Image (cartoon, rainbow, N blue to C red; front, side, top):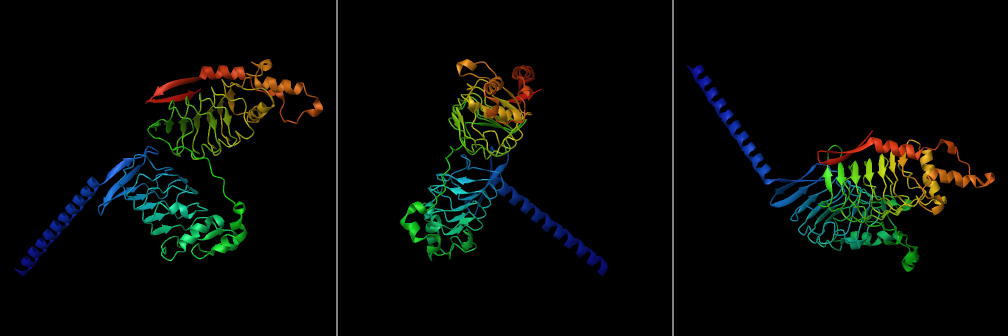
Length: 438
C-alpha cells in the first residue's frame, strides 16, 4: 500500500512540473510576441539589410550596427533617443548630419572609418549626453565641434591616431577641465614621436604649441579641407538588386556626383544629367563598382584622381560629353577596365591627346571606340591613331621619344565600332535595363 501511495505522489509531482514548465513556456512565447509587436523594422535601401527600431524603458532605439552604411539615411524616425551605428563604413561626419534628431541622447559611432568631422556635424544635439568615437581614424579635433552638445558628459576618443599639435590644443584644454572627468579618457597621442602614448588628459599645452606658433598662426600646419560632396537624396535614385546591385540616377538633373553612394553598388548609372566635371576621389567609397555610366552629361574636365579607388571597374561610358583630352593619370587606377566608350566627344588632336592614345596602346585588352579627331579642322574625321602617326612622321627622327610599340600594331577603330554595334543589345529584364555584351 505504501508503494502504491509513493507512485501516485510521484505521478502527481511530475504532472505539476509539466504544467509549470508548459505555463513558463507559454509566458516566454507571449513575452517574445509582445516584444516583436513592440519593435519595428526600417529597411535600408543600401545593401538590402535592415535597421532595427525598438523601445526599451520607454525610450526609442535605432540599431544599425554592422550594416555597411556610409551615411545617415533620410527616412529614420526623428524621435530616436539612442542611435547605434557601430562597425559601419562611415568616413566623414558632415555639417547638420544629425540635426533633425533633436531628442537624441546617445550616439554610438565606434569602429567606423571616420577621419573628418566638420565643425557643425553635431549641430542641434543639445540633449546628447553620450558620444562614442573610439576605434576610428581621427587625427585632430577642435573644441568648437562640441559647442552644440552642452549636455555631453561621456565621450570616448581612444584608439584614434591623434596628432598632438597646435590644432589639438583647444580640445586638450577642454578635456583637462576637472569637471570633464568622463571626456576623452585613455585617448593617447600617436604623433609626433616624442609625445607618443601620452594621454590627451595629461599632455601639456606648451608641448603641443610653441610660443612662436601662437604668435604666428601661419606656422600652424592645417590640413587642406576636402571639397564637400552633396548628400545623396535617396528619393532621386532607384535601387535594384537583380541581376546586379544597381543604383539608377539617370535623368535626375544632378549637377554633381552624389555623395554617400552605398559602397556595395556594382553598377552606377549617372547618364543624362548635368555633371560638368569630375573632381578628385568622386567614387572612393564605391570600390566594388564594375560598371559606371556617365553618358550625356556635358563633362568637360576629369581630375587625374577622379577614378581613384575604382580598382574593380570593368566598363566606363564617357560618350556624348565635352571631353577634348585626358590629363595624365586619369586612367591609372583602372587596372581591370575592359570597355571604354569615348564616342561623340570633341577630341582635340594636339599633343595633349597623346596620353589617352598611349594608355590605350599599352592596355591592349581594353576595347574602346569613338576616338576620332573633331578639331582642329585640318584633322577632323581622322582617327587619333592616324593623327599621332602623322605627328611623329613630321618630327625629325632624332627628336622622337622612345616608345616600345610600333604604330603598325594599332587597333582598327572602325572594325571595333562595327563589332560593338552588332554585339551590343539592350534588353529589359525584371524592370532593370541590362546591357548584354556578345
